[in-house]
Image (tube, rainbow, N blue to C red; front, side):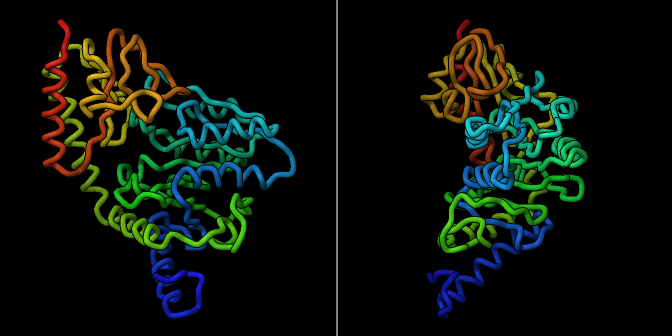
Length: 344
């Protein structure tokens, strides 16, 4: 496989694959191909957005994010704080949602950048990015959203989402690991974190991961063609699981049930079920490692986020996959393990 930067025949063939994948991603977000910057994943894309925008300034300013962001965002903001920027972490309401008025009230003249995730990876709660983006645009602040969890699970409407930058990750969409992208609504003079050969229009140096990028383009195209039917299928399966467990499991709590959520995620608390048992049997993951499965009086959505008090309960972080056969068997397995470990 050739290097896309090479002029020989193998390089030209590689360049064709790279350009085609870039068009697929650009078309999905309705932007020009030059506004798609391929990265090693969403962590790098988030960092490029945050540090790249901060690097556009000659002096520190004010930046805003929420308390429930992915660590790649939270830690980047803490780094900006150490560099002299003023950082505000927005609280969320009882459902895990950032209220637009909370953002509006905290904006100030020095605010130049805001980053709020599209959907939370723990609760599945969808943030009102259309309203948040409009507020930022009215104020003149750049608005970035981490759309890793929402890609393929929420229809992307570029006409109503006033977003300046979007981060995505291929493996969260069903594609290969180790590749992602930062998509811009318009050209921005981001300060690159990696310098060298000038790849990705000088935004991100280094030979592109062609197999991964082609995979990202392909899965983006697949989502564009099938996302509506997949969203309906995932929601049907998620609701089926929650209904089944609610009807048969005493003490079940479904967090943020009445909030708008992505259709593949449920955060559940079950009174009397040991969190360690859920973890050991593959039904949940421990808190602090991307999910919740800890025993105690409360468990945070993550170590920086909102607390959900669950007296005497463990919690499940359950991701519903789109393969119906596997989902049905996973729901049955979850129910059996819960029943075996209930305390009366």
